[in-house]
Image (cartoon, rainbow, N blue to C red):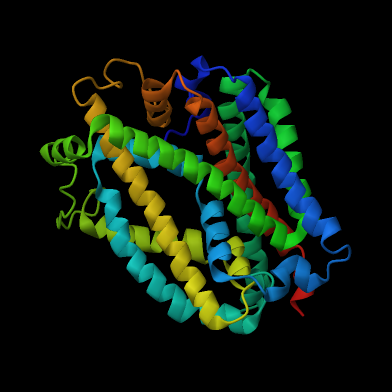
Length: 375
């Protein structure tokens, strides 16, 4: 995934929003706000600390798992993983093996500990296990991580919409961030979870439509044969060279540690897992989440193969139609559906993914500064 966000979605810049695109986008934002209003004002006017921070601990496993998946999938995944598979092959599929280890470690080590403690902030565990200094250092590093990463998420999402609407990025950042802050802070964790589910359904449906349309256009058998001929499924490289990005050891071991750190030892993940009523439900939540997470990654990889099939004889990078990795998927969407409403809806789907990602960090801030509820 390119680090230069200003290059994102250049291909879609040729697409202008039609009235139905604007309606779809406004409805998406309105529903997000409405969910926050419902859980913050209409459903119950005075939320208790347990209801606000922990969803009253009566949530079901599958909705929570969908919410966790939404906050860990962003435009980076939806645009970057297919481009990686297009250029370097399907070694990312080895992540399925990694996920087996991640699920086992999470279910048998992390979840029982955090579920027994029932703390609002995972940083409170560091104070219990070590001391306040350790907690302060890790919390400071977490804040630094957010300060560096969150502006990128916000700016990239604004550029995505700006390319199709012509609105200034500053205005879009203000509007979308204010909406996100509103429903997150007003509705509590229950509103966050259900808004995540709504946004997940949008970007997953949009991306699935692109995937199915691509398979239908290129032909499943053709995609399979082209992928085999190009060697993109030659992923079981047992070379011990740890500098090789495509061997089994770097992929399986690297992704295992990466996903544990990114997806499990994470404030947004643990706090949502603790909203269910029992340890058994919490373990099922982890399993559902990891399944959905892997499913989306696999679809992204296969989409990369589909895109390769279309451009195997005319590489858009060689012809300079695409200059950055994160331009490839938008270019493909424009190529196969440029005269339909799909490109505009695709932009809204990327915005939905970014909105869920942005909410993840905003909610983590609220939780970190609300440790008085831990008691």
